[in-house]
Structure formats: structure tokens, C-alpha cells
Amino acid sequence: MKLLRNLSRRKLRTVLTISGITIGIWALVVFGSMANKINALVDGGSQYFGNKIVVSDASGGSFGSAPMEVTTSAAVAAIDGVDVAVPSVTVLWDDELGGGFSVPDQIVGSVAGADKGHEDFVLNYAQGRAITEADEGSNVVVLGSDLARKHSVRAGHTIELRGVPFEIVGVLEPTLTAPDTTAMVPLLASQQLYYETLPPIVREQLEPADLISQVTVYPAAGADIEALAQTIEATVPNTSTLTGAEFDSQVGSATAIFNAIIIGVGLISLVVGGLSVINTMAMSVAERTREIGIKRAIGGTRRRIIQELVLEAGLIGFIGGLIGLGLGAIVVAFANDAGRESGTVLFDLTTGTAVTAVLFSTILGMIAGIIPATHAARLDPVQALRYE
Image (cartoon, rainbow, N blue to C red; front, side, top):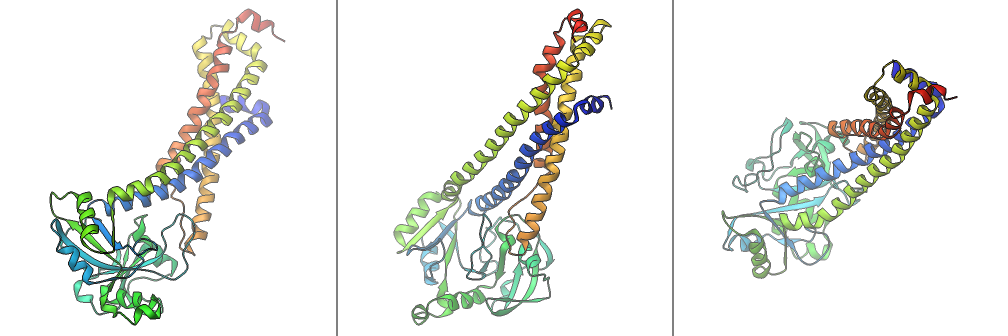
């Protein structure tokens, strides 16, 4: 209560100082939450690509978007060092790509169990079940959590995928990565959907069952993944490969840039908030010079004077941090709610981010308060008592 009473002596100055810290922490929380979401997507991608090689057509376009013949999978499987080659199809949910940093809604089809136990990317089910090999030939789907929420459906309902009705047999638990925006279907169903997206001239030359968009390769134990990827490209015509190392290299630079922005926001809040606290505490010390002199004259130690003023500065930082966290949480909540309707969830406010923001602002205030507190502790008691 005493600390709050001291801060209330000059209400306007205290409010302005807290506002400066609040703005910095608000920005830190919002950008930090966005960084959390991006890092979760990147980590999920790194985990997915880490022990495998993804093979796609090298003709152009985005990775995995050009059609390949299903025979490519057999050609890849025959290469020494390849343990399992799984053909699959990836097709966009619709022809309109989402904006921002989110992964676009997509439909992915493959034969259940074709990886023969190699896939270690664990998916948990909030409702229903996984697709099985027995589902081949039927129109069933497992939806990611974002898709189920976006379309207000659950296991047992029916949903249209590119105009074709599918029975929902399962809904995934949130992963904060690509599966949240993915609809998983049997391979034959995805081939038919993919076939309908191709230009008529291409459809005339192929049958749906001949189509895939990529092959997921699980290397044999002890195989050199990078060398095997080069061998696949050299052996199988018109193919391009993507390994875990290449994925990390491609997305790592972009992630590093964004994380550097977060650090920059933190530094700005450090400078602005710190200078505000130093100014406020310096003025407070000047106004309370006689009070400090009295405390020193009746036996108050320098350590106690420093402790009192540093705690006062820390309280300023703590209050500013709480308000900044609250405002940031409101922005994140509203932005995510608005984005869910379009399937674009850009923020992930974690407990770690929230605690770090408040601790950061509190420690910032305490550090900034050390300079005026040390000056106050060094005041000569006699001169301080004479101060007007």
C-alpha cells in the first residue's frame, strides 16, 4: 500500500510512465504470439520432414502441385536405400489460397498403413477414428481441428469436399501445425478430386487411378538421406526432392528474420520504458529529498532506501506489464476469433509468453530504478534536510 501511495503522488506522471511500458509490452505480446504460431508450424514441418524425403514433379509450380504418374512411386521404391515409398495426393480445399502465415486448407489422400509403421508424427483423435485400409473406395474423411470448427461439423456429419459429399469419421485434436487445416481421405477419393482440378487436356491423357502429386520416401536404416535424395533425382526423371535439412534451410531464414523483429520490439520497449521509469523515479527522488534525508537521519540505511525505490520502480513495470498483457490478450483473442471464420489463426498466446512479458516489464522497471535509487541513497542526510 505504501508503494501505491507513493506512486499516486503524481498521478499523471505515473500514468504516462505506465502507458509507455504498456505499449511496449502490448506489442511484445502480440508479435510474440504470432511468432509462437509460426514457430509451431515450422517445428511441425521439421518434425514431419525430419526422417523422410518428399518427392514431387520437377516441372514447376509450387512444391507437390504438379501431377505425377503413380508408376513413379514404384520407380522410387526400387532404388537402393529406399525402405518404403508411399504415393499420395495433395489438393487444395478450394482454389482460393488463404492469406497471412497460415497453412492453406488442403485435402491429403494416401493408403492407410502404407508407411508400414515408419511415420512417427503422432495424431490424436478428439472424435471418431482414423481412416483404415478398408476405407479405400469410399468417401470418408478425417478433419483437422480448425476445419471442423470452421465448418461447425463433427464425426458422423457429412461435408462436401470440392462439391463431393464425404462422411466425417474422425476429427483430430489441435496440433497448432498443418494437420489442423488438413482433410485426410483415402487415396482413391483424393485421386478423383485431384483429377477434376486438372485442365481437360491433361485429363484426356490420364485416369484418376494413375495420378499422384508426391511420393513420401522412408529411407532404410543407416541410409544417408541427402545422398539418397540426390540419387532419386538422378535416377527417376523429372523429379524434385525435399529433405528435412532443406526444409529447415528454406524456412529457417524467414523464421529467424521474424524472431529478430520480436527481439527488436523487446529492445524498443526496453529503451522507451526504461527511460520513462528513470525519468519518473528521478523526479520522485527530487521531490522526496527531504523525506529521504529524514529517513537517513533516523537510521535508514542506504540499502533500505535503494530497496524501497527499486521496488517502487518494479511496481510501475509490473502494472504496465499486466495492462500490456491484458490488451495484447484481447487483440489476440479477437483476431483469432475473426480469423477462424476464414481458417486463418495467426496467434498463439502461450503461458510462457504471458509470464515472460510481465517478468520482462517488472525487471525492466527495477533495473531502470537502480540509477535514481542509488543517487538517492548517496544523499548527505544534512543537505537533504535543508533541501527546499
